[in-house]
Length: 342
Image (cartoon, rainbow, N blue to C red; front, side):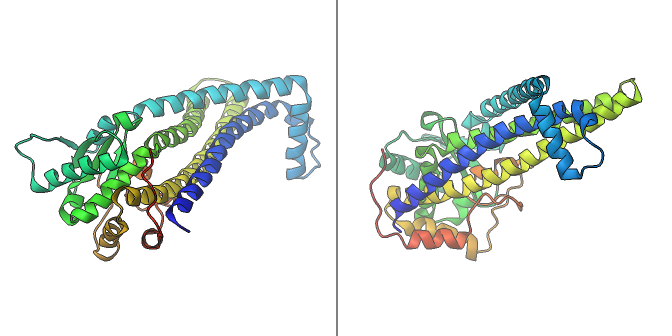
């Protein structure tokens, strides 16, 4: 398989995962509506049926009743609005690449700064050169004061994008390896992965809004003076919404990890297009694999942005990065470098 086939495959898989996200969004809202509305029909379920049969009977009773169906749709729409609003908040919160870079302690570096180090000047030169190959204006460059090795791109589009590299990356990579790393990040920008990352993170934040709703209902049940029966109902509703929200968040994290792994492969392939030299990025990956260099970020919120970084930033059940050995193998077995995308 040559690099263009790898790119096409990554894009196809990404489209399928994106569809799965939308399905999960709608399914979460529908399940929330169905769970709450079905509580009004529990007394109509025969007590002698089994658990699964009882649940199925309850669903049929709810959806076959006009009021039950209307209530289910209404609550589902409300759930969509709540998750949609939280998604928008997440989108705008992470859309400013400069804010994200500064959030991690990044320092903007630019030409003409008399305090530029040799490594920083080299990085600026690489960004300028590779931006020409990518057919885009050079993005702003930030240096994050961490000795671990990592990098990321952020921003809502290529006109407002930034690239950030850690001090550890500047210190441990030679020019060829650093060019491969920066080309990888420019690949994320050109392929619009930075916009996709914002959307995926925002969607996951939207799912977490159900957990906040469940917490609010729980607090109402515990601290509000009301009848014991009302408290029990509220506690049951909060538990059900919490379970639905938790399952949605976990599913969203899994999809986010799957999407991120495919986009990493795509950015690797695009980096080869820009540098015409796969050994640069492959060499950087070997430094991580064989040199015992850490990529784990010290920032407490690094896990939230793990999908945006070049390398793994923490130990997680939801690995957002492909195995390094597989990335090196794909880079070293490319049969041609293709053409620079426009």
